[in-house]
Length: 320
Image (cartoon, rainbow, N blue to C red; front, side, top):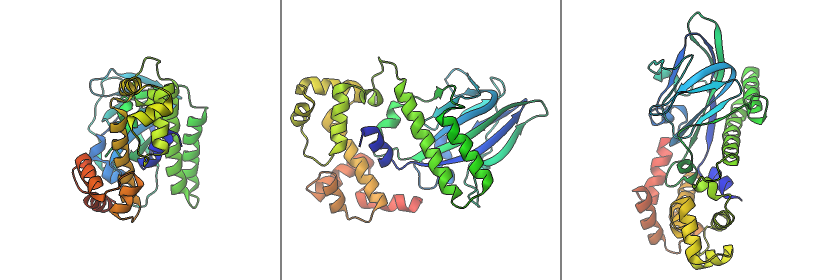
């Protein structure tokens, strides 16, 4: 499994399309800060990613300390870090978010069709979606993504097709529709990340760009392919055909930490996933991620997240 697919699997993506919005001038819609609504929108998720597809018309998006950005039909805008933001018919408009909207409806039916704005002409039709995922113990993908990114001219491509299919599915009210919509939402997010990765500038140095580097990419693939192996810097360097010092320097340049520290962090994410999704004992989880000693694993886990493995499991299950 390639590292990106491995991360997407291990951070437990949960998606949903929430709003199908028809807007007439003048209008403004403000989305609150992700941590303030994630538990109500996607119970059991720790982190909230927002995204929007503009189906018709134009609008503006604003984040604090970022320049206003105009969006046109076919644009998809993704906010990986859950920043509060404003969509509006013109720059500078503000309105307090309606917090009661940002929760899963009692009947579980989404997306919810809503109309915003005044009595002017129709100016935009857009879809709002959200993805929940783990941010802790370690999600290298999130750290590599900017506060906001836009993918243009995708209305008639695969990403646009996901949204159109989701809207059709929601209107047909067929059995199993909720599950289908959730999977489509997650697929859309994954495809957006892939397209963002494909268009990264050549001079960008982060975990995502490291996937394309011939040495760092191979090292990441090796670590993700066999995380329980007793890797050392020497064995990993030999595996990727590079000297230890060169690999350490290159890996740190892209990933921001040495290879063995990265492996330790990733093992904690895998362990957290197993603790939440299985009934395996702590000793079994420790063995799966490369620890011979349950005590050593428990110490490392508590250092990473602040609580013991059993306490983490209890807290995560109580949040669902």
